[in-house]
Amino acid sequence: MKITIDCRHINYRGGIGVYIRELIPFFLNSNASIVLLGDEDILRQNSHKNNVEIIHCSIKPFSLRDTFAFPKDILKKINTCNAFYTPYFNIPNGIKIPIYSTIHDMFFHDMPNFVSKPGLMTRKYFLKRASKHSKVIFTVSEFSKSRIKHFLGDSLNVINASNAVNVPSHANSHNKPIKKKNILFIGNIKKNKGLNILLDAFVQLKKEKFDHELVIIGSRHSFRTSDKESSIRLDNLKEYGVNFSGYINDAEKWKLLSESALLVQPSLYEGFGYPPLEAMLSGTNALISDISIFKEVYSDFPVFFFKSGDSSDLHDKLLEILSGNKLRPLHLSEALINKYSFEKTFSIIKKTIW
Image (cartoon, rainbow, N blue to C red; front, top):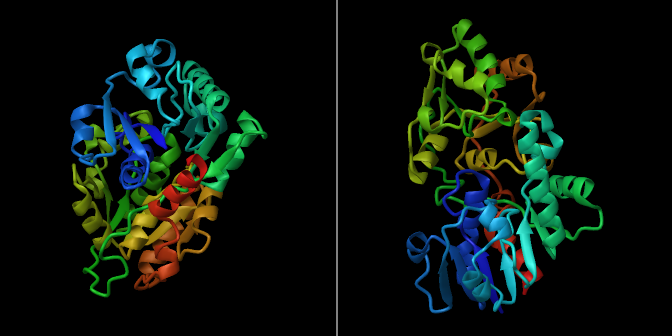
């Protein structure tokens, strides 16, 4: 078995980048011959094995050249393989071998008001194109699977190869760090992340002399600004105890997670949503919106829910949890720690492609 893997998303932030970065080692340690497509300098750092070939490709996914005029010399190499796998729904033109793609969610179909009409039409085109050319579509949850079938066709072969989190070495350790009075938010300034809802609730708490701070992981200036309302507000909220962590590496992120009192994930829409899982694996409780995907993914976990989109309910839940002695030391069972793993994800992908 010889497989080409599209790795051009390897440095993407968010779920797509995490997904492919975590899966690549499993591909490399498999019994298949692996061809990695992407930036050679980046890929060379992760592929010193004999079964790996790298095809340098700087063409941007979803670009005109990617879609309609992909280089013939690269296509020739790809088409000598048995399969082509992409962790997203971009598919280069001219691939003649079986294609396996990943659609993480149907956000733009389900939430069309959150994007411009040209942007919506473009994404609909690429999603429909992926559904037409893919032998199998992988996705990250049963919720996303149902939405893909609803919008793109019930007859499609869609398989849930769930998202996951690499379990940190300190998971379930009894040596828990001292908790700080921090509420943590992980995400970007996109409307579906619900940051404005959290800001409304938090500012109201601060006006009531609440002494916790809100820490947003990331740098203020590197945040995406598609939600202009949240972006403008953030510039004026430092006096209320809203702070950015600045750029932090993975080790620093896990440390901040483990030291925080609570993680809040106020999302209006997700395909999976892994920060609450990261928080709980770090021994930190999570307060999350009661959207369908979170009800699915976290049904067995000791999370707190609030009404999606309701800042008043979020305010009340925060007050109840942080002032009412609701927080308890968090110890997940082995079954919950291992419920979502990239080893399981890869085994599903391998079983399907091989």
